[in-house]
Image (cartoon, rainbow, N blue to C red; front, side):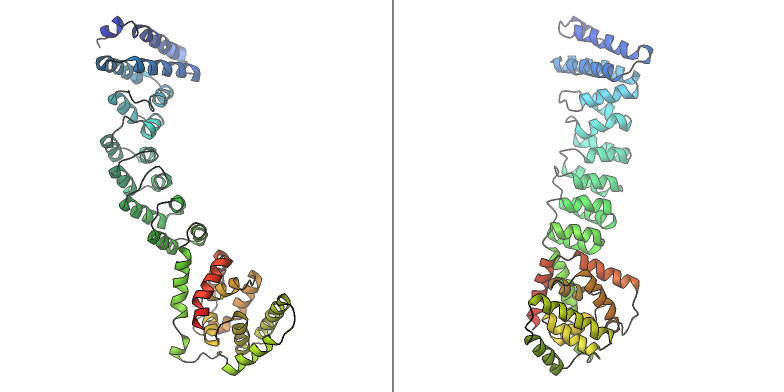
Length: 382
């Protein structure tokens, strides 16, 4: 290595001496403390900053590569961290660090402006997932690199990529991350939090994830009401009368009688509500299901046909909407759901999972959303 040019330079020679002395101190007796590493890193940074000529910079790179080959991991890591944010580092020096052990390479892969898309693509193809994750955290990436990261088989890479709001994800990358989020809760969480997810992907993801994530999506996106509404529409519009009269469908006279009773009550509204709920529980315990359906229809403000259809739903989605919309609390909802099982279970027996699903649906409905669904799906049918 010909360093005569550097030794003749009045500004480079002192730094070379300082580099040698500092490296000697680090190496002597195995001393690699943080202070010594920091001092050596500063000397290296200074050398690169004062190397104004290309030839000088290349010679400095040769010296530093020789130093790196002899250095321990801690020192190489310190040098990598120092060089990772510099723009004037020779690319072969940065690439040497980028292909080093991940402890050394991480800061360079994540931060270095010297690395180009082709460099990153080669690293993605030949290195392990730890290297992919560091690249996914960069503030700026070409679309081709983003797309490549989105198809790699590593959830942790997808978590970092989905959570990187500095990047603009292509349609292809969004679709790939959606597939990953549909399978993995850890990917779904940062994916949901992004501000650039298309409405249709949000709807599809809502249908694919569990109840906990459904609640997160519901809080962030207004489109969830449309998803729930479409589920209810499919049930409400499928009239039970098409397949014959339900055995617990009350007559119009019975409903009219219950409506008339409700109109002559003079108690305060809260007392009327409490009394009505007590009466419905009472007739249910007596197994007077037609009477209950009539009282339920009047209380909820829906038709007898709609009432019996809602109470016939296996997972209680419509019942949850009505209870939420009319401020019927969770305990009352549970009682109604359990006691109306004979109305619901003409073709299937009650199972624990049925109640769990009904409760999960009730819990993730907000009162405002339930009222909106009530107006759209029930009042419009009357």
